[in-house]
Image (cartoon, rainbow over all chains, first blue to last red; front, side):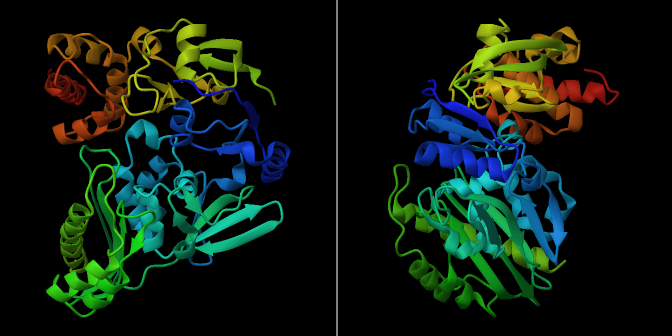
Length: 286
Length: 161
């Protein structure tokens, strides 16, 4: 399984990247970690005429607190999410999700920018940045713009990125006081694509939930913010029937996929919600 | 900017300069051009771990990295870490505990095990299993591999194997 021939360009800057994209047009693909793109090329699911390697662009790297927000460079490797003290403190969902992303060798190369731009519905990081209410920073030949995570993921492998734009960083706003993060996913084997997953933040003051953001992944064509379930949980201490009904509303559009029926996914969503809520109560009580 | 280019890198401590096709994977380059056939090609989409090598000190999938991306870098294969003695204790333990049969997964397994024990020699069986979850073995059923890695971890911490 070998890719079709392509030209390889190593871009040293964003300007070089945009120049290369302009030269090769729609047929060029950006290469960062390559952990999703290279399988696609190896299986000839795509045959770009050019790969533009952005791994050397310094301004896409780094993790820093900027104006009270945590700014994570798009080239940050999944392995770095596991070891960064700033990520553990300011974006704990990313640190909790990272061990579930594939395997150690994949995590040494795969990047957060790549995961978000690729927008695989079964991926962990899109759900995590949505739960953290993040802003995604984008650069293109005509300038920069910022897009809320809620608007960024638009379908299977579809995002708000126009061709020729690249994700440069992700800004994670501060969590509400007392809020904790909880993540869980169900997969057939450790490291497999998720069958159902959940990323949540919120607090449980005195045992009652408040300010929950509950985001499911691997259920639909994009991460699903379960707003009705979160609203029904406000002030509650447990997963009540009313919450389950609200969750069913949130997940009304869940459909069968190749491996798992919609009914199973909805059932597993409820299982994960119970586990995650228990974690939030325990962690918030510390 | 081309469909082939020259790359200069260090492989197992030796300088290498070759012209490669842009689409050539790192593992195919190591095997076919450098005749370092210890790294194996299995699934070619990153899941089986047979192609695992070390680039700039970190384990990676040789099937998901292009040779051109290793330009300027340092690559270590099973040949290198075996010759240096770095994994001698793991190799002995694998023999003692029958942690290999056909050996196809073994170079990748040793790469993954070496990576784990460097950062966490006291790894529990659960942690070992998590770390080698990305290396598939069709022969052993994994228990003996976990045994071997655990035993070496204990030995490296001052115990006996």
